[in-house]
Image 1 (cartoon, rainbow, N blue to C red):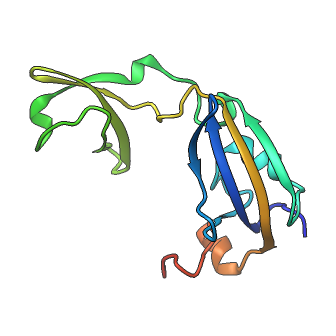
Image 2 (cartoon, rainbow, N blue to C red):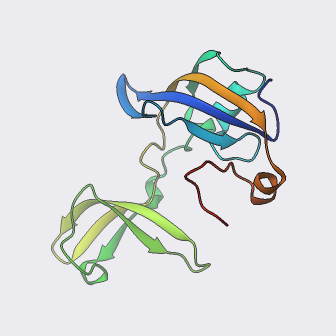
Length: 158
């Protein structure tokens, strides 16, 4: 079975950026996603289209097909009083947007009463290198299609 729209795909992957391993699936714990529903970054999803179980694919994803270009306007100064406890440089915190969504940001500096934060995704502007092995491809269930993502034995019940 080939990877196409509405297929559930299991894969092992390793992500490297500039030769450094940034993320990888654990042995026996594949990444499971619903193809064609923007559950993974666009460049990787596009490259996996048409592949089948057992295929090993090496994919280089440019920033525009990954986490986007880095935007220096996404670096802001916040009041130290906006933080409840010790502020850790390099740590990820979460802000709530006006629409109720949650936006992650990274603290990059603390200067007295201000905290410099970066709302760019950590891998924005980076070229991503994926080494992927397709472990399985199956039809999605109607429930998975309704929810827009794959369900695994460990996943939620709603």
